[in-house]
Length: 89
Image 1 (cartoon, one colour):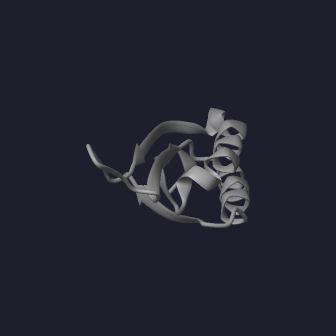
Image 2 (image 1 turned 120 degrees about the horizontal axis):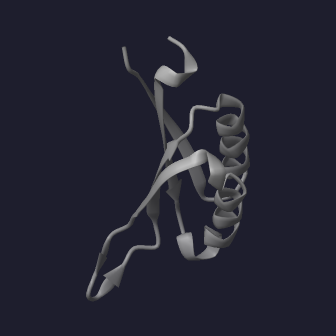
């Protein structure tokens, strides 16, 4: 499988997002040219807004940049990154 056949998704779990959002945003901005799609999810209603959230990132398939960004995000307290990679025949 060559690199162009991969579809890479990162899930970024952020706990206490109000406290950590600044550092997370700095990293995401630094790697913005490698992020194709970004979706933020958190539980919210009229009377409640969860302090935790998940950011889904669809990445360009540049493994060195993905690894570098993942390392930086995982160094932030309260942040965990998980990968999904799909191959397309």
